[in-house]
Structure formats: C-alpha cells, structure tokens
Amino acid sequence: MSTTKRSPKSATLLAQVCTKVQGFSDMYRRFKRRMSTSSRRTSTLSNYTRHIAQMALYFNSLPTNLEDDQIEDYLYVSQQQQNTA
Figure 1 (cartoon, rainbow, N blue to C red):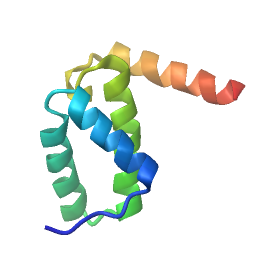
Figure 2 (figure 1 turned 45 degrees about the horizontal axis):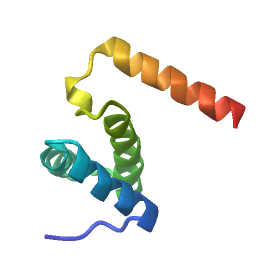
Figure 3 (figure 1 turned 120 degrees about the vertical axis):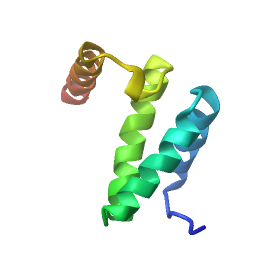
Figure 4 (figure 1 turned 90 degrees about the vertical axis):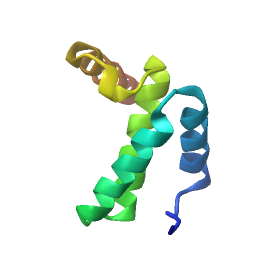
C-alpha cells in the first residue's frame, strides 16, 4: 500500500481522530480509496481529511452520522472564528 505524504500536523490530527472517534479509520480508508479512484490530488485528500477530522472531533461522531443542521452550525461557528482571527 502506498503512503500519502502529509504534514506532521495533519498526520497527528488524523491519528487523534482515528483514536477518539469510533469508525473514523474505516471511513477514512474508504474516503481515501474514493479520492484516488476519482483522480484527486494528494493535497485535496489532505485538506478534505483535515476538515472532516476537525468536525468529527468537534462532535465526537462520524460526520456521516450528523444532521444537516449540525453541519450548518459547525460551518457557521468555524466561519465566525476565522473572521475574528
């Protein structure tokens, strides 16, 4: 199996979410395979994974288990935090 180059920060985040959120490892494996078969770049995979991992940690749940309103609320809070930083 080939390895994906990731920054140490994103690798640490991925390891953290895989440990803390049940099922994330399997979801990530499937997501990585789908991104590869869709000819997405490694950087796209890394960026998408980082954001999905942050959301999973925020809710302590797989993003696929969230309601649309929860995702909207998370995106709104994230947007507000970025605008004030």
